[in-house]
Length: 136
Image 1: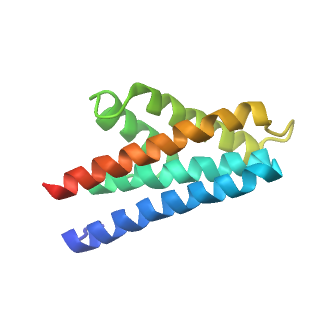
Image 2: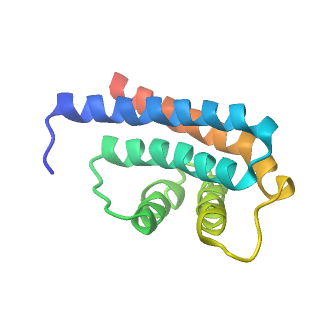
């Protein structure tokens, strides 16, 4: 898919907005303690931010695993983003898979709650990085 600069900017902006809105959903459902749902929304909040970053830089990805690989290749290994963000993203993906598709047990507060703040920090870091790139 070939996008004009204006289309790319609009789509990147939309995905960043969606990342922030989804993070607000996470915060609103924490008191309900629906940990599987929280893990799902937490993963997607970060997913939207990462996909915005990839799109901003012209990287086309079709799958969730592809996004993990491209994040590692273009941003983690090059030290543009902290290595911990790569680990966090993979962990969120795994928890989302378990929460959405696992039949043996549900996710717990202990597994999910500590990831909320780092996920929000990752989204904010990506948002700042994109905005800095747009200033150039």
